[in-house]
Length: 232
Image: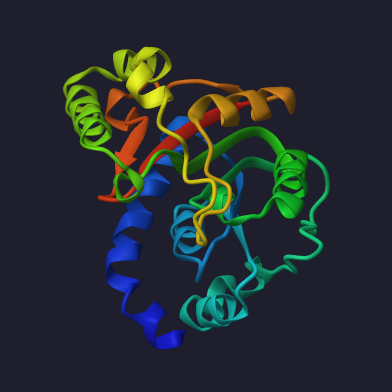
């Protein structure tokens, strides 16, 4: 695990610095929690910018590696038990809670308790990325494949507001089922599902003022990831 993590350092720390800058501009937080922080690259970047940041992860190897990599913030990297999914912080303790590519890894028994804790400790903002629709690897027919790539091409040509509207109205995409039974991603749902769930818990979606940050989706060659900026 340590060797695997060490090979990610250079690229991940560059990404972390860019993401930290983006989150500061959009949310202007004083205190941040990164859920699923891995070895703490975002926690380190935020703290170096003067933002009080903490990280939680269920992987003990990641947390131990992060403590050694970033000793100045070792006490802010915390291992949690997947079985309890309890965050050791008071209600609304953080201005911003981040969960990047985390929600899809929980089974049904733990997903809602995790989200309940995430929203409990969030005072005003949440930033999430998670897969939202069908993976090309699971497309069965040539028609499905054609519809997928036509939609991706159209999405990449549009302004963000139009792209968001397109998700809601294109029947080809709504008809493609999420990867609900993928071993690594047992909880992949549509954008509408996540928006409805967080709205029920008191958070609404918004778009950043800076259009540079308004990419609502990211395609990694296998899955389409949605980005969610949420306010209480």
